[in-house]
Length: 107
Image 1 (cartoon, rainbow, N blue to C red):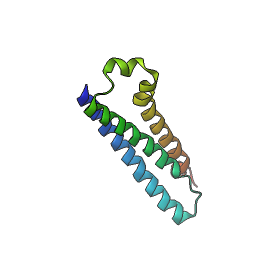
Image 2 (cartoon, helix red, strand yellow):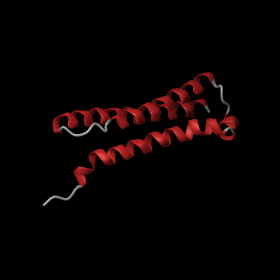
Image 3 (tube, rainbow, N blue to C red):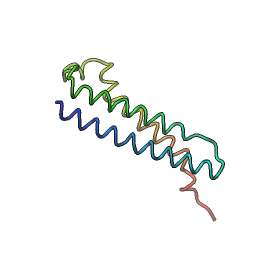
Image 4 (spheres, helix red, strand yellow):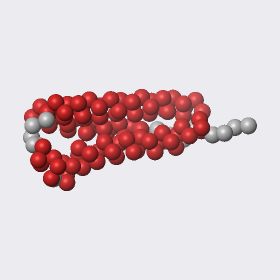
């Protein structure tokens, strides 16, 4: 079970890094176009995913939550499944709001 926790931690860390890069790109674009600063949501989503990666890596090393506890305790279930879902959902919402002008039809 610990190897899978490490794989999950690497995945959450990778997605968090992608959201962090997207936030930095959005900040630079916002400065150039003088758009409102709604890129902070990318940082919040990345922070949530980094928190999940840290939790999964710590559980892989220290093994303080056995697999039966992960699926029975609502707090652990939220930490392992809810945090990544929340982070990715926030990232998608902010990406859609900030970058939707790329898909707008222009004549």
